[in-house]
Image (cartoon, one colour):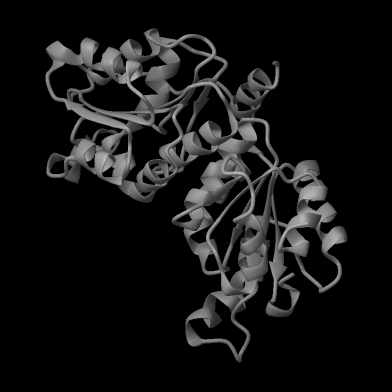
Length: 161
Length: 187
């Protein structure tokens, strides 16, 4: 058992490598990641580098997951399209769901458009619900491997577990 | 020394088990023409991500991972350099084929002419980092780089001129990725 219920569920679903940039909505998840062996967690400096490292880990034979704040999706547009979508490699992703009207201004614009952006790219997404970590982890891993593409679980503040 | 010769020189020094990440554009095409290997990942886009992809491989594999990078490419994703320096994977070997310009788009000058890339690699924590700006010493520099403790970084100057450009790699992207992964899952 780690500090994160969600990380435990993802590891049980087969995730073996995590690369990401923290978000306060993913505080528990990243607390769990810090306890992983050094070869299983990359604290990336920007979200696109995390996604690129996941391609490397996948080539190396591991199930790799990228985790980030939704603001990082902008940095990831190029790597999602010209790495994972083009090479058809699976990528489960945890993305925080920031930007509701009570959230800070800097989160609102991308937060309002994140779902449309994912739809445009043909990236399946789902909203996380508290207590559904096991089902969501299985869905994320299975869908990304079946469709061989990025798949996003959007995690709101109340779903940080 | 031109870029194609430098790519061929580096590849000729690597045993079959080594894993190679070849930068998008001319470097991938030259790597394919010089010596196609099942364990070479040919990047097509995602400029700036050579070090990050190599890092994901180096963290998850025991074999040596060789990143064939370009100077403009490295500068675009400079944070990747810091991740390698910070995590220090001992099996990551980073070679920059430095022509000082964006050759693929018409030879526009790159800031690598004014930035010491090897000094930056040393500063972020690579165990070994050197630059070689003399074609006469390229062979011994490549040998010293591959014999050094990793992560090791060599900034190797190559000619900006590209007299005989290599054709595109005749493989579908998913085939390129699947072949590397299959080759690494055999053991």
